[in-house]
Amino acid sequence: MSQTAIHAIIAACLLAGGWFARVAYDNSVELQIERVRAAVALDTAKAISEIKTVNQTTYAKTVEKVKTETVYGGCKADDAMMNLTNSVLLWK
Image (cartoon, rainbow, N blue to C red; front, side):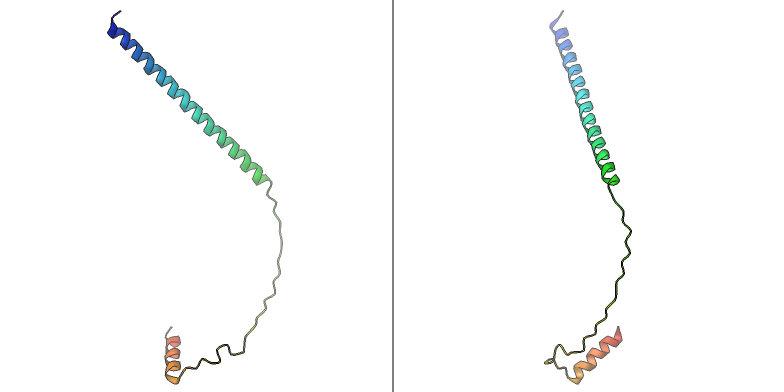
């Protein structure tokens, strides 16, 4: 057998070995992904089954308070400022 043929056989064996190793790796990664998916699905189903629904009616009383005291007693606006403020409020 010639040296070139031996090199070709070695290269083919290395190529086949690399291909098989890659297939085994891909299968192991896919297997781990499937295991994680199954675990997540199981945990999710368990969590959903543990949800308790409660029907509750809440009655709330509305309390309305109107403040009548002056907050800014020291704040005074002259007639021109009041006219400007009123025109802006009416313009909306």
